[in-house]
Amino acid sequence: MSEIEKPSFLGAVRESLSRMPPTERRLAEFLLNFPGELASYNASELAKLANVSNATVSRFVQRLGYASYEDARRHVRTEQNTGAAIYLSGTKEDAASDLIDLHFAQGARNLTDTGKSMSITEIDEIADAILSARRVALFGFRTSQAFASYLHWQMLQVVDSSRLLPQPGQTLGEEIASFTEEDCVLFFALPRRIRDNDLILEHIRKSGAKLLYITDDKMPPNSGVTWHLRCRTGAPGQLFNHVSVIGLCHLLATRVIERAGTPARKRLSYIEALHDSLNEL
Image 1 (cartoon, rainbow, N blue to C red):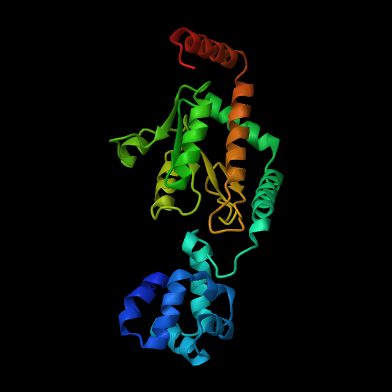
Image 2: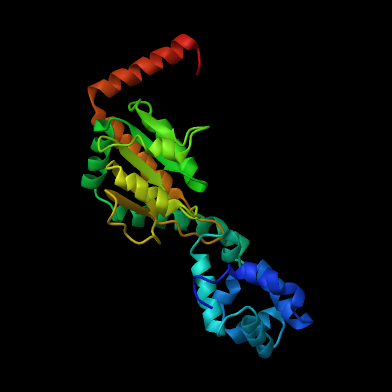
């Protein structure tokens, strides 16, 4: 089965489920709940977990169209990298007493490792590009939208030309068509990314706008963008840990405000005066 022809692993299991004999169906139902276990264990270990024979495991992967168990294993590992939570679930659970330490320790490691991969020179270069741009556009889909929205909200205090895109009722084409080399685009693309992620990125790049690409650390460096910042998002559970992403947003917003200088302080002061006058906060 070629990579292009392959459906998702779970899709292949569901499509074949009704044609499976009882023992293969038992294995299929186990893997529909814990598909990541196929990547974690060899065939004999998986057979024991699912309470089936080794021969059943062999027949099962062949029925799905894989040349071997290792072929199926590689496919599942590839799909794990997309970030689907179901692939990160396992039958083995950490002791409840350790969960808090595990999660917060991983968050701290994510922050430290992400910080080491960046330089203040690069961060300040990005901040200056944001401040000098004709306009600043922030993109984010699915999970990424929350971080694009947060950074936009923080920067709006001193960068009133920033916009969170796409706006309601607007198409991507209408937005991207207006970009020029005078603009700066911040594009968040954390897993799981939408299918058209690379296509959208390429059209923004062709516009000539300065482009900051923010992804997880599993994404290979992208030399086609102006800056590519990669955040570590490892976690002990089924969901990504985004502590480093919010840390990066905080750092960028802080440097933008600091490097904006006197005009920024005047704008911030005026905003606070309006809050008082309008009795908003």
